[in-house]
Length: 114
Image (cartoon, rainbow, N blue to C red; front, side, top):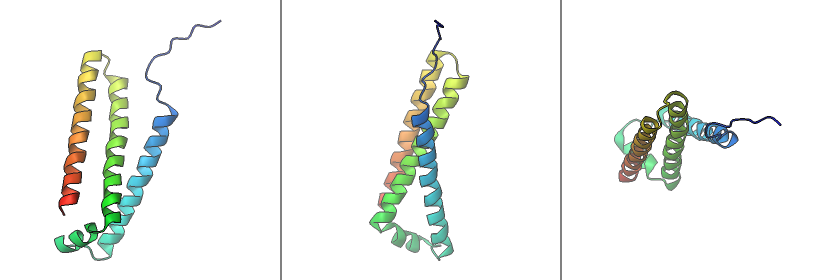
């Protein structure tokens, strides 16, 4: 019997699928915003009018959550692959998570303030 050493977190299919789904959400939102800009949403009042719709706010929230989740998976994998000292890697994971939560909170606050 072969003894295999298993290393790493082995997130595998779950994270691969999450990256694809979040990328799809971000692509659809980007296309939506591009259509809005081409359709005449250029000044603050028209942006405010667009963001007044519940669907647009929800879609924007979904975009922010998708962006942060997508970024977390990517940056976490970079830290796991290239930072070998566990303490430094843990510190970088923690700082990354705090930054992403802060960015998401700030972005959501901006959206709901419009």
